[in-house]
Image 1 (cartoon, rainbow, N blue to C red):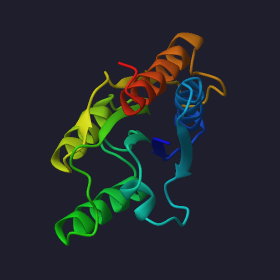
Image 2: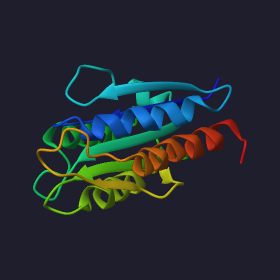
Image 3: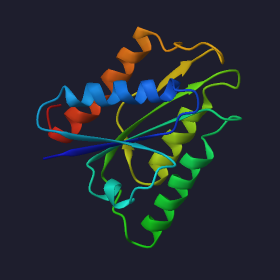
Amino acid sequence: MPRITVVYDSRGGFTEKMAKAVVEGAKNVKNVEVELLKAGTPFSVSKLDVADGIILGSPTIYGSVTQEMRNILTSLREHKEAGRLKLKGKVGGVFGSYGWDGGWVTDKLDSDMNDLGIKVVAPAVSAVHEQYDTSPIDEKTLQKCRNLGKVIAEKVTGKT
């Protein structure tokens, strides 16, 4: 069965809400396994090697991804260069949230995915939030996240 792995990081819970919506959208497609992994928690990069689709999400921290997501991207590059990961030909997507410093994180993740050989096949989802708002991710944004998950799931199952 085709697999999708969603790897995200979150600081205030905003990007985590987005990640869960991405997973929800992907799980709405039949015959696909979906796994959600949080950056900074231990997991083997081999989980990404066996995935057919990879979706990455991060909040924007000073105009870039979080340190934990940066560590994952560095590890993926090192394993790929050493021939331990086969990422070329996989499909992917990106999402992220930002407060005051712009939504550049999705551009960064998109570029990193392409550099790793992962073809980004869906538009990035980026959401602005107010730093102290406890529920800033609106339903429209969550629906875009669900659509992102669905598009990737359809690609890996051959339904598009």
